[in-house]
Image 1: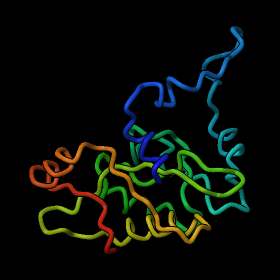
Image 2 (image 1 turned 60 degrees about the horizontal axis):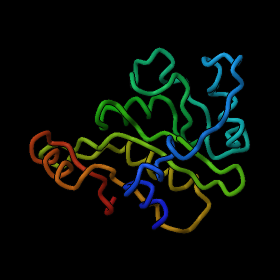
Image 3 (image 1 turned 30 degrees about the vertical axis):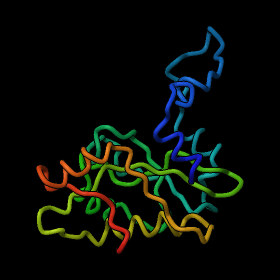
Length: 170
């Protein structure tokens, strides 16, 4: 947890992955092919035997315009549930896989902040999606949800935008 926190809130740019990892590409390589979703999912072990699946819910960028066409989500969630869950997330950014160890199944996901509104409403599809993210990790350890926003911003969004943060009690 401490290591993850040190990379979430780095004290130096040398700790930021984009500055520390320098994979070399041949000069004649087509830059548009540097990232291929299917290859990346395969590298991470997202397949029919995985706890994760590839969803095409965002194929036309209608679910979330800042996510790619293909996203990895927990196997147990259906696309119609994702469409309901994204209504509860800022900018439609529902929880998606961004990194997974092919060996240990440990995973890192990202999402937008929840939007419970002034009355702290809940969304059962969103809660199910978060529960399935936890279930996809075989570790009995708690699911850590790290809010990368400064604390002041998170509080201000709660007051002024009726947005919120993950609640540990659900």
